[in-house]
Image 1 (tube, rainbow, N blue to C red):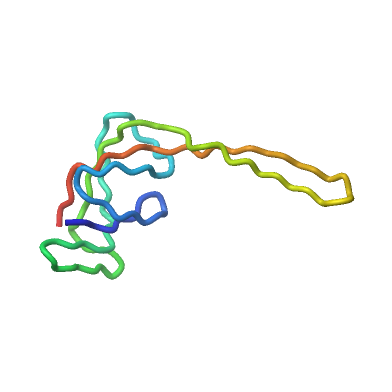
Image 2 (image 1 turned 180 degrees about the horizontal axis):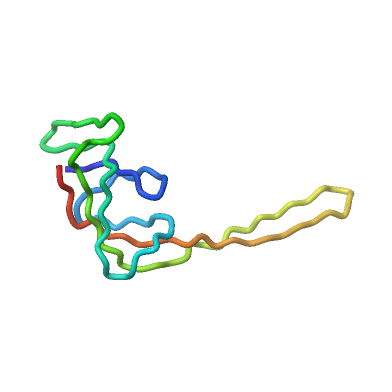
Length: 103
């Protein structure tokens, strides 16, 4: 059984007891989060497709932590002009553990 759910503007394929990283959510660590924008669900070989979401379906997850991703270096250079700009960025993520999928 799996579902495709929209979390923080992105779509994720989730299953029960799976751990995923999503863009930073404002929830506390250890709290339960409910996502009701389920776009597609599969159970026992039968697929339900929403238009755009399946009514009554929801995915419950537990916030297990807030982490930062790997550092990404942004380097810009224009040759023979003396222009060099180096910048770094680390994206903030929320670690979720999927606890339940309800259809």
